[in-house]
Length: 245
Image (cartoon, rainbow, N blue to C red; front, top):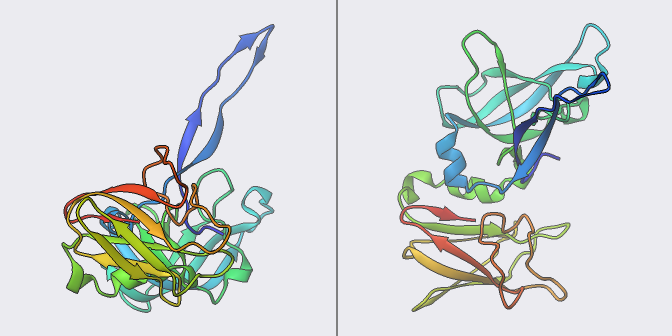
């Protein structure tokens, strides 16, 4: 559902008067490239895993929000922030155009990795927008980094996920630099990662299943989109103490 997407709210204001007719404002969400795990971790002031335990319905019919007011989750693990395990927090229900998650009763019992900003003091409801937040089963890349954060903090990291309908495991991934080529392989979740590469420009070349090409697939959302002579490679620039996905 909400996996591998980041959106921002864009407001388009139109005020046109013609023959007595006035056209009002419209809103929409625009997709942006997915940030790296490190960028999202630094942006958020709370990073947790949590399980959906209940859905609160609206007292009156509200088809815009699918008759749902909020969803409550219980914290399972804390990577960052001042929440504690077993804390219960509730989230505002989205409406499809405000960039917020849309909850339903089928989500009860599911676990999620969440990158959050704390709500205003005047509100008891949290806001969960688009970004790297996702169901736990889709967060293998993020968890691989977050669970080892104390050991790898400050190192460069290149990582990503190869997947079709299912993760693609055991595939070689070459990261080609100016003077040296580095190689790793995808794990059982289709995730690959390399730490400690020198900053600079690289090509990434995964071992592709037959018939695959690299385009704007979400497995490579933050790399350069400049034209390349082959769709079997992707270019990116690695900055000091940063990540590329």
